[in-house]
Image 1 (spheres, rainbow, N blue to C red):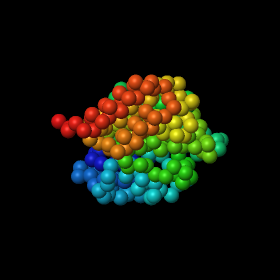
Image 2 (tube, rainbow, N blue to C red):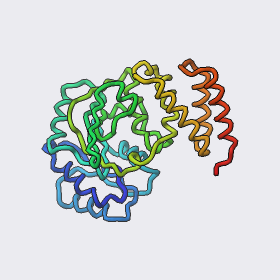
Image 3 (tube, rainbow, N blue to C red):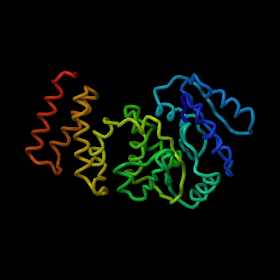
Image 4 (tube, one colour):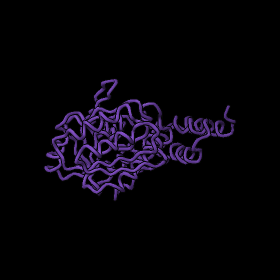
Length: 280
């Protein structure tokens, strides 16, 4: 659990874990140096229960840095990530997931999640949904060996590093994934990923799928390409990750895809214009 100043929701999140019928787990808590009662709540948990807890509190570079630390600290065979404002859907969900894991030779097992505020249910039961929009990490259980293939979370993607890692799993023929129609968690919608768009990652989205020969697995390649191009333009306009944006746009306007010659030329000129124009 990556944590930072989540005293208002943390106890409920912890209760959803410690109340589980399944008890064969360790709880790895990675705090970014909270200055509220987050650490006090964790201290009480360590005193009042017989739980296997690992805890550190130190400055970090954001949620994915904390999750990477958690990967290094964890000793279990399977890893699951949830935030201080998420809750498991029921007190039997870990038992149910454990049964699924025992009967599947998969390295990634995932189910459904629901937004805690919006009540929107996300059922990513097709490869098209996964590759087009991703899976919320609160619905995913990773076998430890996954990270030997994918590496850890890429901190260059500030909001969508979890989606990037998941895509690497689904595009790797050496790794098997399994969807189970099970409600895993209700996720908090006040975090960074709910309020911020990762233009850097999505400028690269189409290119990633193309390089990994996964474009034929999504239904709307045109929209995916258009979104990636828009994100490249946005990055240069905002003077963010400009070299990365240029590498991506050159891949799009010189590659084999649905873009017409006039559009390619116009896009190239727009990239030059926004690159040279000072940011207001």
